[in-house]
Structure formats: C-alpha cells, structure tokens
Image (cartoon, rainbow, N blue to C red; front, side, top):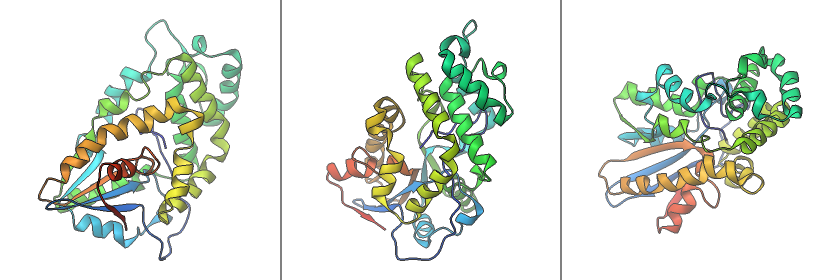
Length: 290
C-alpha cells in the first residue's frame, strides 16, 4: 500500500465491489486496556461509492470511542502544508534532473507512458522517481473512477468533526514526506520501474484487495499488501516495518488511558509478521478480531 502524497493527487487503494451483509469478520481488532478499550481499524484510503455502507462493526467502534487516532492528525492536513513538506523531498535540487538519474531504457519507457496521463518528460524532470510512481498510481485509480474523498480515513474524520470527537495522529506530515527520502538513485529507479510494470493491472488488483479487506481476510491482505517484504525489502522497510515499530509504543500508551480510542491506519500496517497486531500480541496483549 502506498503512502499518501498530495502535491498532486494520490490515491492508495480502491474498491469496485458492492457490500453485502455477511458473517465475515472486519479488518478491525479490539484490545482491552486496564480501564478502556482500543479499536484498531485497518483502513482503505480510497474507495468508491459502491463500498458503502461500511460494515456495522466499524461504525460501532467509532461510536464507542471518544478519540480517533489516524496516521497523521487530519486537522493539520491542508493542501498548502502537504505541498510545503513534499516539495522538500519530491523535487531534485537545482542542477539535477530525472533524465540524468535514470537509465536510457527507463527514460524511453517513461516517454511512452507519460502521454497517456497528459504529461511529458519535460514536465516531470524535477520530480524524483518515487514521486512519479506514486502519482501515476494515483492517477490510474482516479481515471478508473475512484475517489480519495470516499476513503475510510476521510469518512471517519468527517464523522469525528461532526460529533466533536478528539482527533490525533501517530506521525506528522514531515514524517510521511521523508519516507522515501533515503532512497538512492538505484532504489528510486527500481521503484519507478516496478510501478510502471503494474499500472495496467492496478485497478483490478485493488478491487481484489478491498474484497479481502471487507471480509477481514487477514492472510490475503498480508499477501497483497506486504508482497514487497521479500522481493523489495528496502521499500517494505520504509513503508511498513520502521513505521509500525514506531507506532506500537504509542498505541500501547493508549491502553493506560481512561477513554476508548479508535486507531485507524492503513490495513497493511496491521497484518503480517511485522504488523502492529503481531507486535502487540508478541508484547503480551490479547486482541480480538471483530
């Protein structure tokens, strides 16, 4: 699952399946603290209208919580703040350009793909490969009819504001802007090439992802969302492993509070051997999938 970047629109995952009531579990866990309850909800950041209504368990967890914790504090989320933070990491400094960094073969491939998205190589020369990869993925889903305004995070953020619930974040915009900042030229190019190779199948793949998410199919979610764990450990570490490890102590601290909390993060962060759920269980917490 990709991190959200909004200098240009970025969508993460989408859904084209219609919800039907079933007996399947949700991608939602309950953790009993000493004096409170924590709900951990795996999010899909981009959905279609067909994805609603959500499973009742999700709204019930929201209603039972006094505070909602997102990856970032969405109250501080603005177009200006995103542009400011990501311009620091998504752009090459003066004197450097995309064409200088990429192999001739990748440049040629980009020249073939970019016109399909209304872009030219000249227009993206200042952008780093990882950002172009993110934007192309985003645009591919947008062209397929999906909207980030329908994502799980946005849905519950609007509900939180409407009901006066406290909103918090596990990391900052700057944290997210720096996720790919340590990629060297080779890693950047590899990330871009891998993305270009999967663009055609991205909408269909994300539909399968959302089906697994809707059904609480943890094994399938892990296989889909953490597929880079072995094939591309650098990317997996940047997107998931390091962030999961930082979030776990913050989530553990919430178990000492008196109020109930709903924690909403990308579903890929909750599943897998290095996911938040596995780490919490390793630390002795008992979690129930709802």
